Image (cartoon, rainbow, N blue to C red; front, side, top):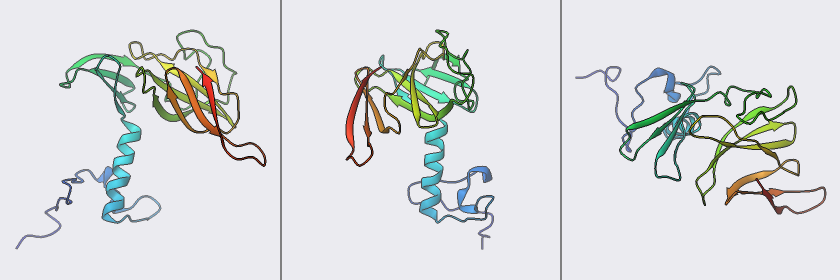
Length: 185
């Protein structure tokens, strides 16, 4: 008879938690325990946010490894083609973090933890937040640097999407319904 402490049953989809650090079913520091399905979803979202893997315009794969501070470009078979160092995800953005010497205010901008993809031309973008304002920067995948960004013209934008170099988002004014807004990047 085998002890259940020594064996670990795989979930129905083959997901096996092998590292205690990522075993969310064990509970977190607050003592919250997750059901099996919640643990699997939590782990998936954790890795999706921390290590996004996206297809680029020239059919390569961009792997954003925030833990190692690099963007790794790979071919379709997963062979590494190039690595570029990144620092934009480190919390806040100084005025010297971009390749084009973008002048930002001294403080207050923090990374929005998102990588947005232009579905038309496959350019990659990230955003920074300051109070209720959003600034979007294109990411140069070759160098890892940010290109000059643009501040969206309205506060509190929701559901930001990028298509063909334009940002689309929802915005709601005082006593208004949400409206779709378009802004050239």
